[in-house]
Figure 1 (spheres, rainbow, N blue to C red):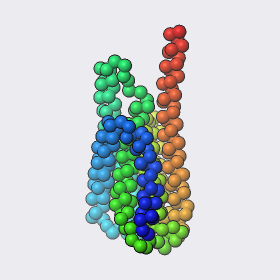
Figure 2: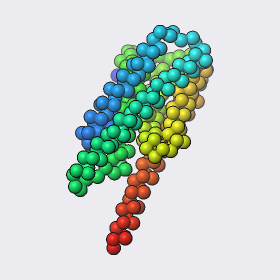
Figure 3: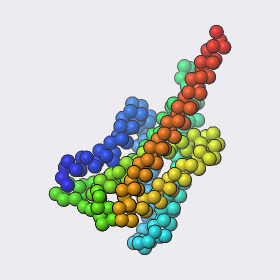
Length: 253
């Protein structure tokens, strides 16, 4: 495929994540440190999941066994997400206390969602590193690779689109999940693992002849839907705070 194909697939899979990092995370050193710590924690979680399945490989090549493996993998990641929420709640308490001790500073809704987005980006980046970026050097050869079930696009391009979908899904799912957990809105919180499990099981459609043509757009559409949900959650909270401040200012007048 050569260097051009390597760079192109790399930008497809990781470009949006890099843009999110540069815009929302990189300007604040604390968020960079949180991202690195969360990235390490998610990589450890994925390695533990892989170690769990080490005794069962190779899995039987039928959808039942693969579906069971996906359910277990998603369950472990969602358990890790809940642990991330406990850490997030502790961080919020520490930052709120620090803001209280420094007059003129406060921990607003925007900052809380930025912390959640940072942890979500770490989850998405860990997923991409673990499942896609690790075999990117294979693209530097002269040829490419196709699979019989998906002759419409190269294996590397399909992997890049798959990695992009899950990167965006995991990144945007964290603010939605944390907001639901913080406000004890069970339906909002449970929607995240349900979407995660649905996306994971949908990938089994790639095993069907030409299935990638339908599966990849659906996964990207689902990721866009999660991004819209995260944007709505953030806009709702920030807008509510702004309206309260405006109402308070009018009352003082």
